[in-house]
Length: 174
Image 1 (cartoon, rainbow, N blue to C red):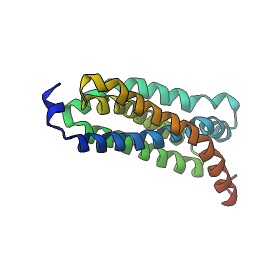
Image 2: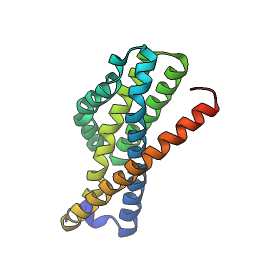
Image 3: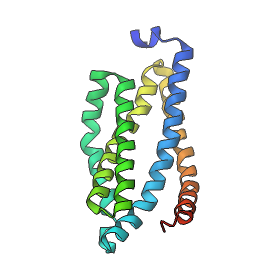
Image 4: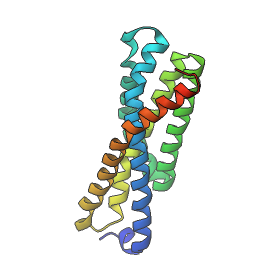
């Protein structure tokens, strides 16, 4: 057991894992929502079905490009700040994407998708952040719980798709 693990009271460990669990549920639901809708939105913004895969491709590329820098940031500035910044980038990306959809800007939509990909790089670090505060014999269980949280989010995502579609229709956006 490392020095860090031995000085963290169990109640604080549980709170950290609980916070990461909730963020994983919400984030994975948002991933399903965005994965489902970005292709449709991209095709409509460009007026061409060939553009449908571009936002997802950009998001995945950004996720891969930022995986190492996010890990470095977590080591340099700390886990809380690193994960918080990562999720804040995702919120900014979502807001830029929403603004771009409303204003018909495909380039803005792609920029928002790129920022969102950066958040995926950060989110995936959450399982390791949760595990590192527990003794080695409990780490795989904690990682499993965080991944299970993502499964819950993936199940909630389709519900959000139908709800967001109904909201858009009621506002005359569709």
